[in-house]
Image (cartoon, one colour):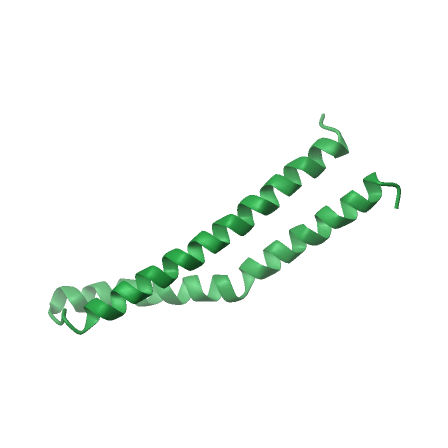
Amino acid sequence: MSSLDDTFEQMRFFGKALAEFNEELRGSRDALAQAHDQTRALWTDEAARTYLRVYEPLAQSLDEYLRGPAPRFEQFLDDKIRQLEQYLNGG
């Protein structure tokens, strides 16, 4: 069984990892969108239409996650970490 100190450290590590993941995902999404926009006008065959049927829902899902759940998850963890830290410090 782990102590609350261990739990606190694990939560801090997870919160940092989640924030880094979300930031990397934002950068990857932006780079992919830029490459997509640059290529789209040049690529107009049936393969491009097949690709778009897959790309557009993916891009929409990424945008929705990064606008909604991502910041909420980060805030939730930040709140829990802050509460646990206050408890551990006697506050």
